[in-house]
Length: 97
Length: 167
Image (tube, rainbow over all chains, first blue to last red; front, side):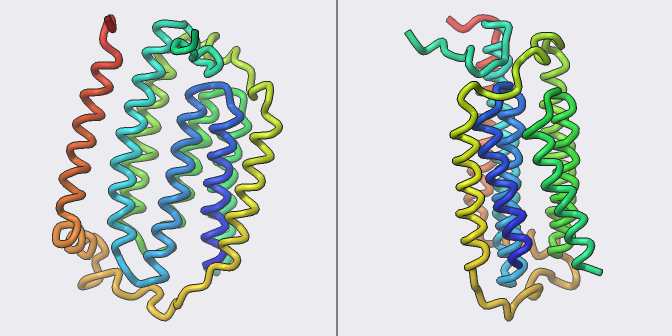
């Protein structure tokens, strides 16, 4: 069990690091997906070791929410690309004075 | 045997995630992400969650990866690849990530539960999908409906955000 939990911890921390240090907005979105998958792996592991299938049902909800989050993120990326011709996150500052 | 399979699949998964984190080319990063998703699907099969493994391949490696690659396809290749890899102040966030890893690994190492039920109650008549259906539609019907509304709202939001002009 510890092995699965450590893989899950690795996925979450790699995803969080990717969100914080990368500059390309597309790769930030991909890192978010990696993080969500780490959480899903934790749920499935607990579902197996506790003998309760509710964790697997939760994963279905997580997948749906991840899909809608990616759709919104890509819509924001396309909008900012149309406006700025760039997807560098350091250029995404239209709300700043 | 199962231990060796676990190590191979987890190396695939974590290696794919590291590929996303470190690769310079975003197209290549998308391919690493799909690689990692397939590794996670393998881990799900090892945890007797066959339905979720297939869902992982269809939703993540199919739909989400295709969405991301499609949006990258319509963008200009030079602006996409000319971006520098890391932020100028990437040192401290990387340190925070390593601290997060240490914290979560410590928790995973110390985590103790009663594993007497491991691998039981996951199937009805040998079918994992039937068990998920039973639980989903008997106990989680309202969250299921709310998820449907979330998907609808996300669809409308994506259309509104990418309209021709936002005034």
